[in-house]
Image 1 (cartoon, rainbow, N blue to C red):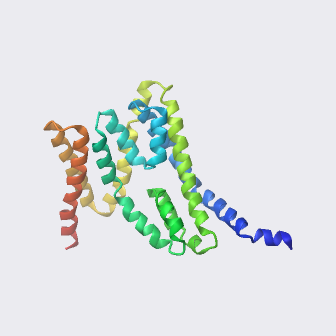
Image 2: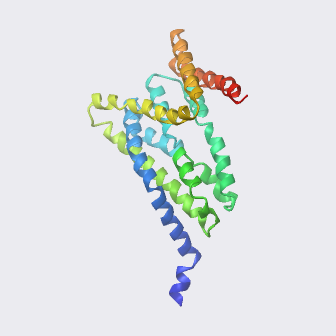
Image 3: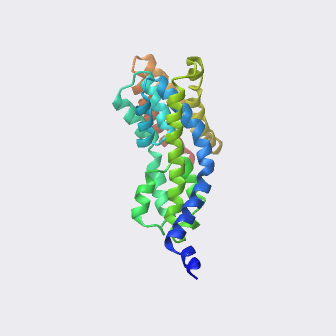
Length: 243
């Protein structure tokens, strides 16, 4: 009788949900490690110390933004330029966080508020596919485990990449810079498949960036202006499509 009570205790249920979350988040961990290692190598190449690039993963936890930030540091962009570019790139997280809270209504705000800080494209997608756990007892532990699994993998991969950046040949580390472009192309292609005009918006942003660089504007501000003005062109192009 005592063993059955222990199995059904709140602590036992919390452990069960946490383990289930780790198993669900394991594929995310496998996907994050190589990207995080690449980021670590590139950040080290950009001149960041091992502590700085690891702390960036601890505090930012956003692959595309960190890769872009490392690239902007490498070209000498200022802090304000990096902050604005990162803010614009990560603006979608506001929408993701609101959607996350709406899907997991059965979980209290004291859980959803900190969990929203750990949302990425991947953890959001996996959480959105597993909404039933929010209705279960100790369901918050399930989503906590998913996010922590991804978070720890990203930090560890970043640290490992920083270590490798000190020992691997420079020509090899430089070739890993293609990961930045591969990641953004990977983010762009699904949207272009749904709406071709998204591709046109990307081309407009690219042209604005090129014109800014040609006019002598710093690379950092060229990225910021290309991102903002290119995105604003989408307001007209996509609105026209809806009408």
